[in-house]
Image (cartoon, rainbow, N blue to C red; front, side):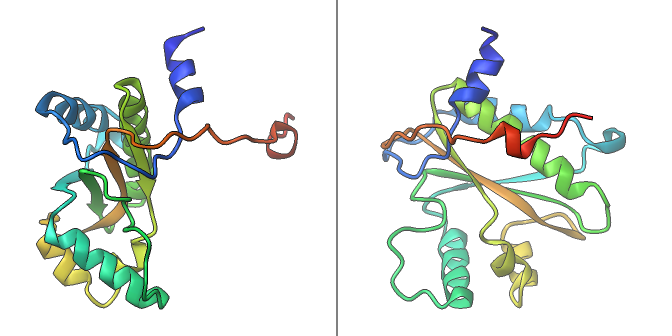
Length: 176
């Protein structure tokens, strides 16, 4: 079977990581995979903010997410203690920014799987990062002017294993 198809079949969300950091080569490979993603009209507007899992901005985002959801005793943070988190932003006025960011993050997720790394695509911080503290987070995360959060992804070496999700093609696909 084609190795790309096999990688797609094997990929699953990782919710447990070792403390081992990514190598510079691993991180560069993941970022390059995101940069190589197609964008509408080849605009290449996606911006990638790379943070170590210990970055204070991630703790602030976690606290704001929990405050908005009324969570007082979380069992983990939104990125499951991964050693690296990449936050993707795009021009807030560009119609296709969210779609382009989603394509880039999927490229990165598949590249991570191909490297044997765990990854978790993250959307749960949307309310926190776009809410009352939007300007603060945009500045802290060094988003370009007029850019806003679209999606994020966590990376690290897997400490847990999870089978890929199942699906019901009969219910999810219509052929005309």
